[in-house]
Image 1 (cartoon, one colour):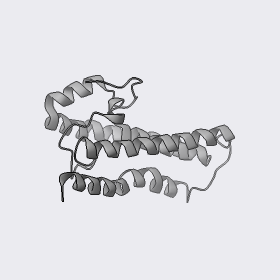
Image 2: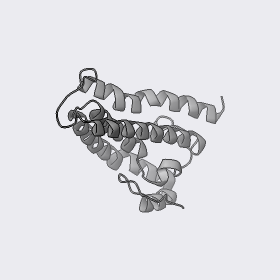
Image 3: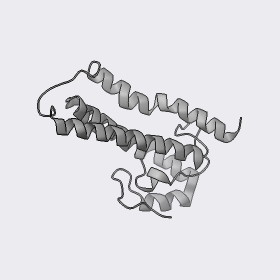
Image 4: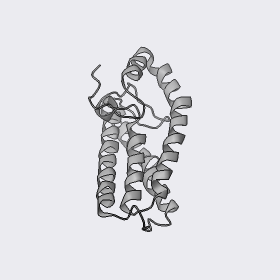
Length: 168
């Protein structure tokens, strides 16, 4: 099996233990089966915003997986990491696009089904991922990619996307 084929297989598998669990299984459990709520979020504009956030989040996550396979020849999993620093596609705008996109999906679900607990869950999720990134992921990336990581981290924000893409 070629390295790229392994990267594809590993990335597809990772979708189910990463973003799928975080963006769909967790909210499903929290809401008791995506049961709709009512109140302030129960408005057509909130539902439309929810659908947009879910769609954008799914597109960004898919683009991230493509970049991991195409550019990094690896997966998002630390068990099968990339061989090269991934700094294209969504990664030109923000260092953690999968986490940001997953949080957007969770917020979108909350808006779509009028459940304020889900935007709160998204905030808690981002706080937990922020700790993981700061304590473990970024030090490993700095160690693996050295000066390339330092330059990338100096120009691309961790959590709030840049409007214009970074061009190394």
